[in-house]
Figure 1 (cartoon, rainbow, N blue to C red):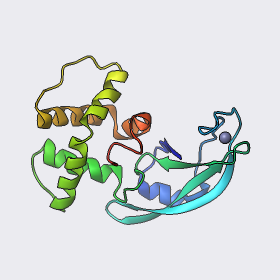
Figure 2: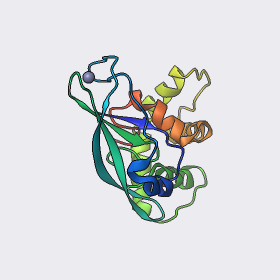
Figure 3: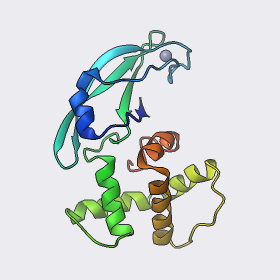
Figure 4: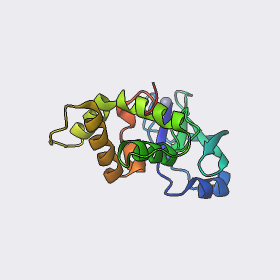
Length: 173
Ligand SMILES: [Zn+2]
């Protein structure tokens, strides 16, 4: 299992800080719900691609009670995606809002397809968050509106707070 944490840094800065980063203390186990401080349990390494390819440590914790582990993912990186959240949103934004295509077209289309398949859950997130407005019926218009709402809320905030609405994240199957 994993949770998202906003470290408030770029990927580059996160990489530079390495294992010395300010990792959050978790005082309740999301597995057994025990109110107990999780122990540090090493790191694993992941690729994060933005303007460069970065190799970053992911902090792992272990519950002293139920022995299960928890990873702390930075909000700029989605589980199972090598490209960062910035890259994903830039591609969605250029395709769906600015209506121009940059870089790898296939990748942009892939992200858009995933995004279009997640509109119901994304809408649910905003409804739970108190949004009472009307959304367009047309799927593409609705997608554009929801994308604008995510960008207005803040990418990191959306990734962190929408965690419970998706099995992994808004882009995963
Ligand atoms: Zn536990």
